[in-house]
Length: 289
Image (spheres, helix red, strand yellow):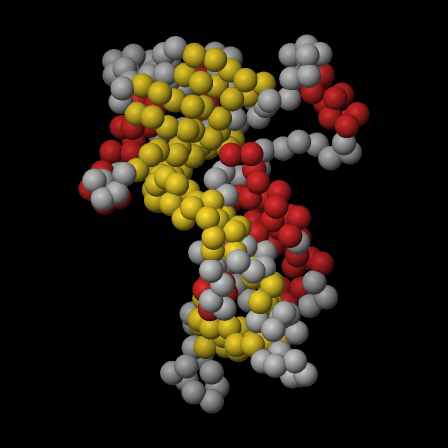
């Protein structure tokens, strides 16, 4: 299903306006076996759709396994408060100061900060990078292209319906009078999805217009094409809204990727913020690394 994008008035009900196979070379016979053979021919690595909330813990687990000090080589749950860089020739030219919940300095029990001295600091701390801010590196581009709300939700019954009715896809572009949304199917085996819904501040607010109950109603409209499924076997009794978060789509690049006397390196979203189309964020982040 990961190769399909579906344009529709509803994910499970309503009109399918079109579907796009993003890997169709004109020879695909529509079977899983063909996919497997083709993948083995072009790459030793299989294609997988793997959500970031699962990928990041897996990467951390692997990094811990590879580190000579294991889990002791990592600090998690800390908040960066400041970056200090020193002139060339210093023994440790860069220091990251962290605030760590549950940590207290032996020399001052009221102080929960921790200083990490290093030769180089790699800032892979995301689109709202505290390292970039601390080093006063500006961004150039379009800071606000669009505001959206991400709604993480689960529904095993929806996933089963999509598989049963040959409507399984990775992305659903939904347009109907009740809602416009892009829904990402992260896991069609267990029914895990993220919906991206346009958000228009200051005319709308997260608290007033996107409560969990309101989001559930928008999701049902996205699934059923804006029609009322009550009294039918298409009611989504198991739909659960997990999280609701607002975010801003940007297109910006940092004025410098290397800063702080050449001892601080920006990497990934800290260095460049892209719209999500095309997977440029992950691909350029890997290239940075």
